[in-house]
Length: 194
View 1 (tube, rainbow, N blue to C red):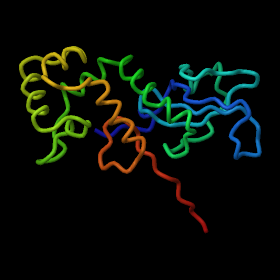
View 2 (view 1 turned 90 degrees about the horizontal axis):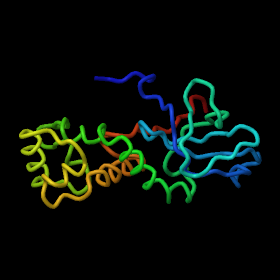
View 3 (view 1 turned 30 degrees about the vertical axis):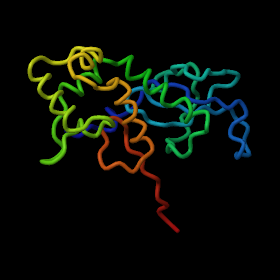
């Protein structure tokens, strides 16, 4: 099932970095924030409203309605365009988003299917090989998983499932993946006229 662009829009995002004077490489000194969406992990740069500061890790509204702190979404950015502060805090915030939406991400373990005849989508999660995959499929056929703790208790020697998903999200944000399970793929804009 293909999603429409409206269904793939972010309404809220977490602040990864806030630069009071904008980027050092820019001639403009407007306050600038780097954000990660809390639904599709979209990386964004945004201007804040005048005399409004945002804190790193703060959840802000970026949807179509009246925004209290964000003035304008300037652009979607790639992982490579993130500041070092943003990169350093990204994994923690992604993990926070996943844990805050536990039901949504536990359903991945309950519903994920095969990508093709040779590979299952759960095998894209770092740390899940054939033995873990077989154990997950067997356990979910017995009874659906109720939480991340339930997954860890019923599948022996499995690392923290929330961390496995966070690691996969980071890989997808870095780009170059064949399959995207959680993040919206980033495509560089091509110049139309040269």
